[in-house]
Length: 132
Image (cartoon, rainbow, N blue to C red; front, side, top):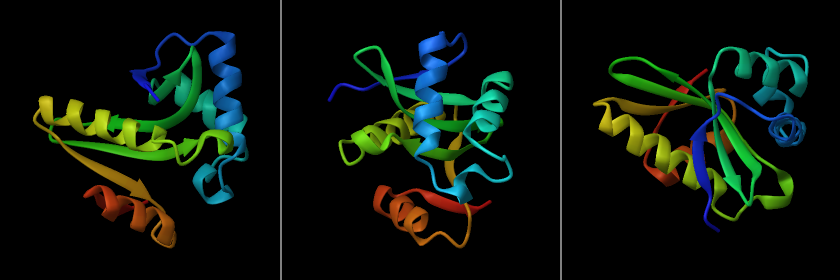
């Protein structure tokens, strides 16, 4: 599945709807402190934090990315339920890691400390998981 990863800066209405569908499938701990997917998406778009994975003109996955000079933090990684286990999350992470390295920065995956799935995923990909 050729997933195109991009920093979403000018979303279309369809992109916004896709993002709402992506985060509608997210567990509640991933949305916190936001009340719902709408609030998370609105804030992520307003702050320019969304890194997205696109296939056939539709967004399938997204994550928040925060960049400093020496560290990039990736959080709120979520893929639509219908397209999980097809490499979308891996592609998002690999591209974020590639871009961070090009900028001389380390990539850190941020997730709630009490979420073993996030820790297992980070370990599987060779990333450092930092507690949220």
